[in-house]
Amino acid sequence: MRLERVPSETGAILYDPRRLAHPDAVQFDPARGGHAGAAVRAASGRGSAWFLDPIVPDGPALALRHYRRGGLIARFVQDRYLWQGEEATRCFRELRLLAQLESLGLPAARPVGAFYQRVGWLTYRAALLTVRVSGARPLSSQFDVVRSEIWHRVGATVAAFHTAGICHADLNAHNILIDHSDAVHLIDFDRGSVRVPGSWMGSNLQRLSRSLVKLGGPSPTSQAWQALLDGYDEARRAPFR
Image 1 (spheres, rainbow, N blue to C red):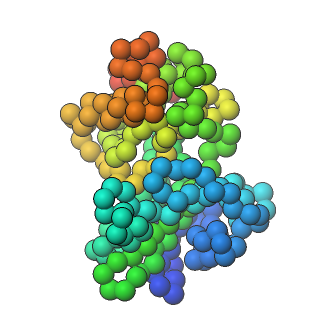
Image 2 (cartoon, one colour):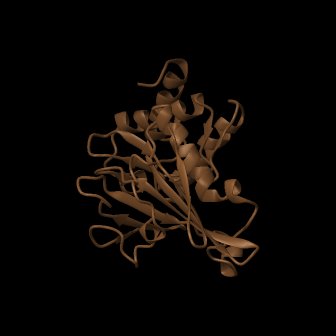
Image 3 (spheres, rainbow, N blue to C red):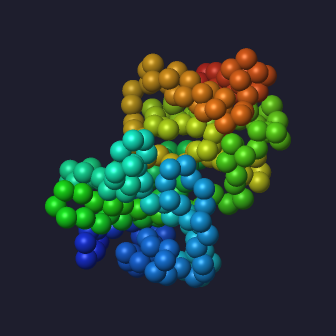
């Protein structure tokens, strides 16, 4: 996949020309327009996210996320990051990773564009546009209705990413989506990376397990979690389909 770059007044935009023909900074600001309809605020962990109508007629609905800090530092600096060069910006790195995931055929959000804005000499702000996963809801909102076979599919999907060497830095129940056909998708690959398969894969699963327990989902001794592990193990022994 070929990504293109254009400068903006205060930064730059990296984008997929198949999905964003005329990139402009206003498309990354729901308050300023650039979209066919109104922006709808969406829950997305610590980040600021919106669901947007298509930019072009008959185009896909979009998801816009502004990068925001978490933890103690967020009390002092909410949305600025240390400038270390354009290719080190979180938005450019995530967009490039999403493009790689799409080329591998993995079920993640499809890349549209990334925008950073310099704030002085030392910091920047960033935003990311992706194709919205149609008809999807986060796993965290469906614990009471998710069937065993879906848990099995969640495990198989995580295994597909792991087999490809893709580490999701924040694998939790908010970042796993189930669509209307019960297909599983992973989103929010901020700080994600490509690694040689190893011990990090077990740590990734443990992170997901802790997230499920924290959010009121199945425990590590539940049938649901066992179904997830079964799906994971089976997919690790055979190609993901």
